[in-house]
Image 1 (cartoon, rainbow, N blue to C red):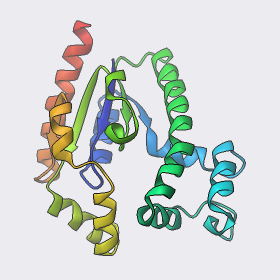
Image 2: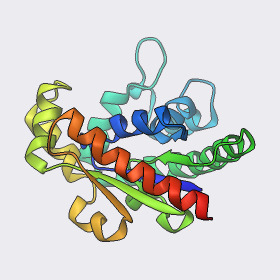
Image 3: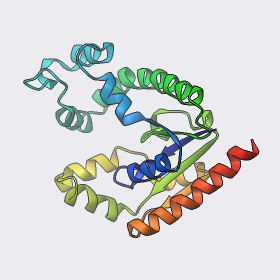
Length: 201
């Protein structure tokens, strides 16, 4: 069973991913895949530098992820170009990792995909789990926990499809509007439902 786990920025998706991993899921982390693909020496790295120039590199010769993020938040064409470079490579790598997890015996494989609805195809998965939190809570987390200026945090949030549009397209929704214990209980309920589905398949 292959499950897509998604959620808007600062909704708590990474916490749920860690919980699912602890309960036995095979995890495919799209953010980690992106980081790996953007390392110096990769084809994706070369294409990004060709499109955006060497000014998006750090003194160490790596991609300045924060600088690139600011650039694409301010320029929709730049964002589209970056997505066109990164997303096909991410998809191919994700499929390879899913195959490896399946070969390793994972009964439930969870693909952690922040931009599932924006850049992937939810229909490719057996179930979609959405982690959601109120906008005010997410904004506060970005500012206080990640240290982002409020304006940049708001632009990051605005660049994603609002969760209200994602909820009807998701089979499971984990509300993250309380404390850690509450989130864990809700995630556990969803995990047990996924296990039941996998057993019945």
